[in-house]
Length: 522
Image 1 (cartoon, rainbow, N blue to C red):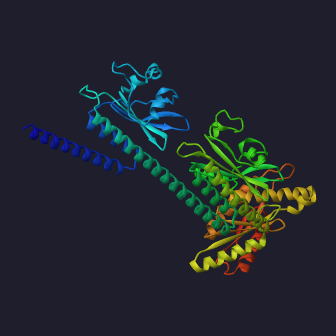
Image 2 (image 1 turned 30 degrees about the vertical axis):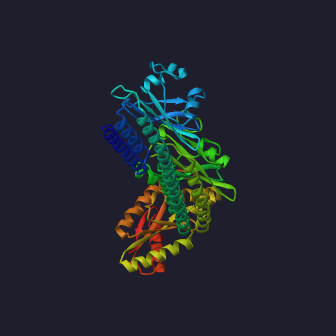
Image 3 (image 1 turned 60 degrees about the horizontal axis):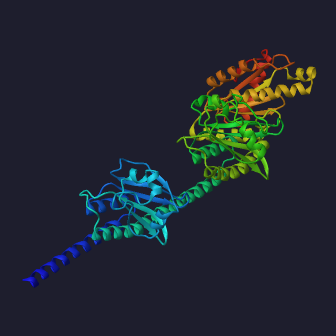
């Protein structure tokens, strides 16, 4: 009978052991299947609670750089936010032994006095601490509260906790490595994306010869790269020794933005060293202000609605030619060093492209008036003629002459005459449509072509120019006026020479009729 009982007990003990092994194997599998740290914390907590019926439970991660423990998961602690520093005393030595250990003695008093003073144990309601140690380095802690039935943890449960802790340590390390690889992959993807973006920007810049379109493209890319709200490009004028806004993007008022970009509105300019952009220009290095309020370098912060700004100088052969500014990250974050590195890469390419475009513009632009030269205008007009022939469109030409200009030179001198020509050039640039093209034809004569514009509309536009020009006031000069003659394709001719000749004839007729008027060729 006794033998039979012993045999039964032995079988029952074996079955219990097999069951325990199955639990451990299942637990191992569950832990190994998890690659997300947060999910792993939850899985560890659930396995311990189900096996031991304990509560509460806390999981801490150890940060080696700050030498402190941070509570990253808890069950039954009401979302407690908690950290504590490493202590090199008895508790730390106990942790390094890698074994689960009680934090209270048999009477319920704290074993480690230094922690009871700070109420750490009281806040955690913990009875046992289980270290997570990988290759002699502490990576975390598991804290376990009292069993629900009030009984102490037995030997089997102790082994289970120890085994789970060992497996959890391996899995936690794997999770961290996986997160690190994901982050590295994301960083690599970002670098490759940025390199591709910079390559495409560089290629695009080589094909954009028009300065205005080039500035628009550069600024759009700078704003997009940094996820900024708006931006501007300021170019340096050595004649005036000032930085002026040449192009702006991202304003809510599109009409006002267009007026700025078309030079119809004059913005504030800065001397080198003045303001944050002037500082970036003078020092030839990027300047970031992530909190504008209280910064003396930024001028008119409140009125410009700028919260943060990054200014990057553009250098060609170690000479600064301007500054790219981007303001206000759209997600209200701050400009970072990564943003600056990307912007520097863009500005390095932009500076060369802008310098090239400026040189090209100088070659096709009249130095005195800032308008296109006659030869370039005729090339553009030829392109417009071919386009109009192909698509059956119309366009008009206006020949313009400043009335009695010879009297200005003879009476007031050539310097006054140059002043009048400069004023005329500035007037035409500000008062034409974006699609219209104007040039200095020679002397005091100018020429405009109005794309896709019939004679009636061209007359209205020319009359508006005539009235506006008569309002120009120059310091010591009398009021100026202009005479304009209009011809239209294909009504008045189907080649450039004929159209120019007839527009010129109409202008001559306007002068004969008393000047300061518009005449259509008929």
